[in-house]
Amino acid sequence: MKRMLAALFLVFSIPAANAQSSRADSLLNDLRHHPEYVLVAAHRAAHADYPENSVAAIREAIRLGADIAELDVQRTKDGVFVLMHDRTITRTTGQPGSVADYTLEQLQQFPLLHNGQPTQHRIPTFRDALLAAKGEILVDVDFKVDGLDAAKEAYPVIHQAGMAPYVLFFLYDHPDAKVLLAHDARIPILPRVRDAAATRETLGFGKFPALHLDETFYSKAIAEDVRAQGARVWMNALGSFDKEEKVKPGAGFDRFFSSFPLTGIVQTDLPGELVVYLRKKGKHR
Image (cartoon, rainbow, N blue to C red; front, side, top):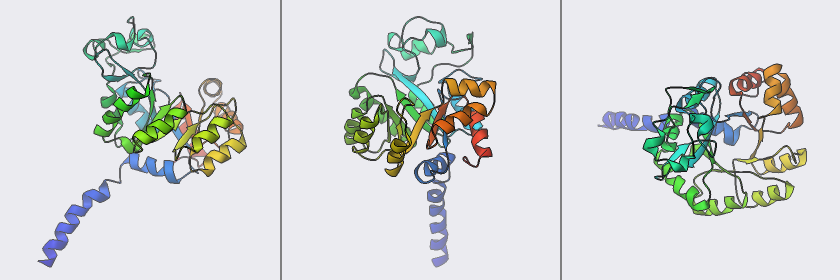
């Protein structure tokens, strides 16, 4: 009888142990407990070879070793959250109008474009994107629907996908962080701060995994304040740093980290290149 009970204990204890063994769990542990590693956020997912904000681009970000897939979320005419960066869908599908002008069924008739050419890929729902990321990568939700009520309506989608701990919910207006923390503290928030005063105010709202700073006001003192509160400094390499990196590998990222040395998360259009760069320096798993 004792042997049987011991065997049953082992059987039922194995799933609990395995529940912490996914790649996403390892990344979450690094985010929270290993500031010596710099995390890589793939802007609009990894879209060099696939349409941006597509399921394929999410899978490519995972393959390249990125830690976070940044995804843009909007809402259709019939109230479904989908991925789309621009206010209009013209650049990414060749069609007129905005996401809100179409139902989900209508939108999914349009092939996503890549380098101006139609592909087999379609606009994914937010839910499908979360499920594609689940267990493999963290997700930065760049929520582009106006209003806090809309943000609150997106929260159940995150919970239903089982992705609450693995999401960073990006906010453009830092005061909104206080409201959403009070609404549901289970979903981590990534507030954007635009100056030193906003940084100090936001740090007073509660605990955040990271704060999105701008290069216009970054300083060592501000970055140290953020890190002292257990948060990471998020900075973008988008623009001149990524462009320089494309022309002269290593130079763009060297200049970035020389300019923002206390950065803990970097958003880039070159996630694969940045992962390789950081690994060579012992700054990435």
